[in-house]
Amino acid sequence: MNDNLLVDSLQQHLEDKRVQKAIEVQSDIRAYLGEFFRKHGFIEVPPVIISPITDPLNHPVLDPSIDYYGMKYGLTKSMIFHKQILAKELGSIFTFSPNIRLETPEKEKTGRHLSEFTQIDVEKRGASREEMMGLVEDLMVGLTQHMNSERASDLKFLRRKLNVPSRPFKKFRFLDAEKEYGKDFESILSGRMKDPFWIIDIPLENREFYDRESDSEPGILEDMDLIYPEGFGEGLSGGEREFLEERIRERIKRKGQSEEQFKWILAYSSKGLAPSAGFGIGIERLTRYICGLQRIEDTHPFPKIPGKLSL
Ligand code: ASP
Ligand code: MG
Image 1: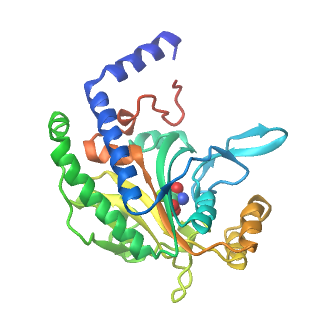
Image 2: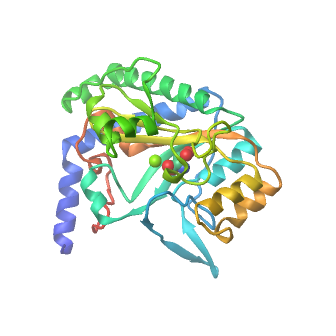
């Protein structure tokens, strides 16, 4: 793309009233989230942008790193390990964490992938998965009510009718859903459901090593994804965590990953990490769902679309 075209299309994007509304709504979503977690006793901590440890993720992304005084640092893909450390030391924490995930260019088609996005990353010492799911359900009910009352004219402008979900949200066990609806169960269910719902008990091979393996069902994790309805797809991942050094070491091995890459988290766990549970909510995906937008780039002033030039 030549320079003028890039600048023209950025200007057009920023002048688009739908984009302006979405950015305004997102500002309110951020305020609501911050207040919600503070009210529930969570401490806001600053994000970490560069570090020798970050989330390995369970799907292929290109892996950018920077030369940090001769050491190799990665750009944060999620603050999972920093969250575990902070949960141990501080208890309940959250952060608005900028993440860089250089998704493969075909992800552009999904309408829900940005290479640079922000997630509110939340972790609580001693919490169970069920406690965290309850918290998310309260959050979603409260947020949709807030949006319907405080942002009614914006939602009307966006032609968005937002349903307030009722609790508890429906839960599907991963393997049951896969058996009933096939490999594509997540998008099939997302397309059919009218309210957000959970996928729980995700098998080990479908997830990163840090989510805790069930004591009663080996190979199944104590974790969850929140899926938005109406085809909006995944909005949150989370779970209980492995916190014992030997179990973390074993899970790294079973994933075929290198201990060297995760030596810092192993070293920290050898001093004792605490049991914790948490989750991360993509802010742009949440905004897309609340606003009912087709494409995630309309939620961001400077969207980084996988594989495309952008400012
Ligand atoms: N680390 C997860 C992610 O970024 C979120 C979480 O498990 O807290 O997808
Ligand atoms: Mg996820």
